[in-house]
Figure 1 (tube, rainbow, N blue to C red):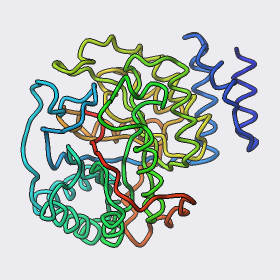
Figure 2 (figure 1 turned 90 degrees about the vertical axis):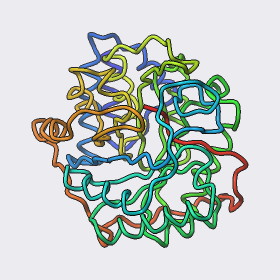
Figure 3 (figure 1 turned 135 degrees about the vertical axis):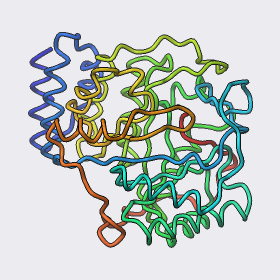
Figure 4 (figure 1 turned 120 degrees about the vertical axis):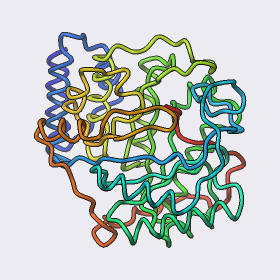
Length: 357
């Protein structure tokens, strides 16, 4: 197994790609050898994306009553949970939260809405105005996760200053029906490609620990590689009482770290962002996870659960030798992604929001 780790390290560092078969074999790495795998992945991270780390803060601008049946989600209207329910908040509150996020060290600010996205003209105009103001009044990257959007909505968001659109695949195609039945994996894939068509950087990842197999996790990574996402949030299921996955046994911390490292090997140039569920599932090994190839972090609170003090995360990153990036500002944002060759301009028929935490 050490020979396999060293071969993967050498191949990726030299510009080659790890094969699907090799990635699948790496899932068999024992706990004893995970530190070696993590170290190899960290070398890959240093070569291809450097020591700068992205820190993203979330704003749950509209909560609850989602029409989709994602089995991990406490905001789904199909389940009875203690998740908060409230209508979309206003522009001033969103911008105020963004400015607070900037002060606590965030480089990105993501507007998240439950349900089918901005379901009325008034709600969408609120989002547009908030994105405009965040782009001009702060140095934050303005991101959003609003479910399924039309091509026209994406065009307007891009003009308003939107940098990224988050739309997680959540699970690999072969496992997706075990997670959600009210929309399809193909609809999610199409939406991600559509965002790129409109010059918006695609952000997409998934959730580990929903009962999927090691093969399913590798399949998801290669699906993300195929569509060329530039930011990959890795979430770890934080089971929520009242949802169908509320009693799922959590993954061991070292198992999570193993997959962070494998994802870095598969996606050497992407931002690998440790997201929802990290505090609960990684516990004292959060720093080790950042040294397994990750270069991004969700800081502050999640959609309906609390995160830890952002100052602790910023200090952790500094202690690990990361360069904690200051907000780049709109004038310094990287260029738009290349348009996808077959991106559709049509609106997908259903929608959802990022994973509940």
